[in-house]
Image (cartoon, rainbow, N blue to C red; front, side, top):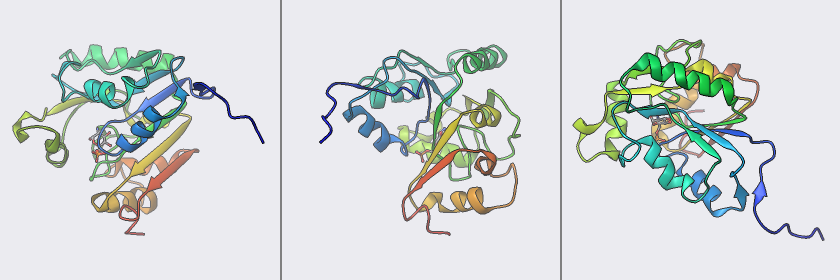
Amino acid sequence: MPTPVAGPVQCDQLHVMGLATGSTPLELYKLISESDLDFSQASSVNLDEYVGLKPTDPQSYHYFMQEHLFDAKPFKESFFPDGTNPDAGAVTREYDRILARHPIDLQVLGIGRNGHIGFNEPGTTFDSHTHRVALTPSTIDANARFFDQPEQVPRYAYTMGIASIMAAKRVILLAFGKEKAAAIRASLLGPVTPDVPAWVLQRHPNVTVVLDVAAASQF
Ligand SMILES: N[C@@H]1[C@@H](O)[C@H](O)[C@@H](COP(=O)(O)O)O[C@@H]1O
């Protein structure tokens, strides 16, 4: 019988984790929080952040990550695009520099109902790096459930680009629920089109897709 290893488990292969927000990765973050995994020597980079929200704002993605993962599993360092800085050029250049210094070993991804990844909305070019986006009505509507009033949903966000996501060594795409089924089918089986940003993952050499039955219901 192998002797159980006591104490925290270092993830030797994971120096940099790319992290996503939204309801989809919540269960994953809960499992990690309750595990013996130790990320204190690893870095994290988040996909995106709303423009105009401070890290202390409960609706910010920074706050979300603190609450759902970092309080239980602190990383050595965690990065987000600076949502408080309205100078998009400065924010995106700085985040691209951070990403260049922190190549992602494993990127966690959810997917929007319209096939967006991060906040790369339909039509985003596959060679895009960090940029500022105007959120589509569909995304504003989908994310309104996290806000008291729909008009509180920020209209802009900073997001890693599609090329930034594709540079990750490995990707794990999670999708749960029937409202994701059409986007999943179009992404995994559909023809190439920037209208479904997640389609680009068909070109990535190392993607794991985790679906529940409802999200897989259109295969
Ligand atoms: N920027 C995030 C995405 O990274 C996330 O994948 C998507 C889906 O969210 P949910 O998992 O709540 O359906 O929401 C937001 O738009």
